Length: 216
Image (tube, rainbow, N blue to C red; front, side):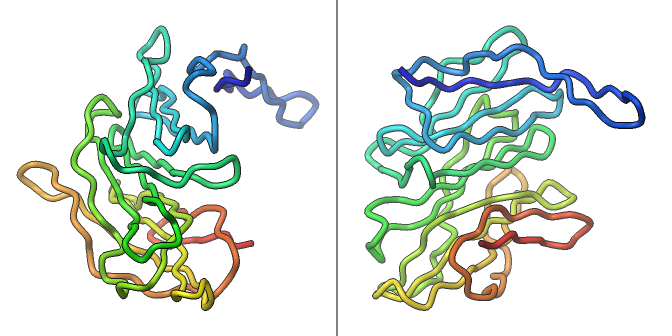
C-alpha cells in the first residue's frame, strides 16, 4: 500500500564547480491507513519538516518532533469535509513557527461551500479556529483550488479560483490576512484584486513585498 514518505536534503556539495544535492534516507511520515493525497511540506523555525496531505475528505497534518513524525491530526473541524484528490487539495505555508493551512469545503460546486484558513503559532502543535476567506463572494459564486504563502512579516496571503455559478469566468483572487493581538486571532485584511483569468495556479509566493502567482 502507498504511504506518505519524506526525503530530507542533508547538504549541498560543490563538485567541479557545480552544486550537487545530497539526500538523506527516506522517512515514513504516516502509515498507509492515513492516505497520501496531494502532500505538501514546509519547515518550522528550527528547520523541522511539517507535512500536510488529504485523505477521505480530511486535511491531515504531521510534524517532526526531533525523533519521529507525530501521529497525524485532522485540521478541518469534525463534520466538515474538504476537497482532496491526487491533483488538488489543501495547502500549507509557514514563517518560523507561524503555520497556515487552507482548504476548500465540499461539495465544491456549491456556492455555500467555502474556502477556510486556519493558523498555528507554535509550529503546528495547536491550531486556532478556521476563518472563511471567500465570504465576500456572491451566494452563487464558486471558489476552488486554494493556495497560501506568507509575506515578509509572516502574515498569510491566500489565493483561490473564483467561478460564476455555471463554472465559467474563472479568475484568481488574492486575499491578505493578519494575526492580531491579544489572542493571535486570524482576520481578513482589505480584499485583494482579481488576477488575470487562467485555468490553474500552481503556487502563490511573496518575496520582498511582491506577490507572485504561477499560472498554468
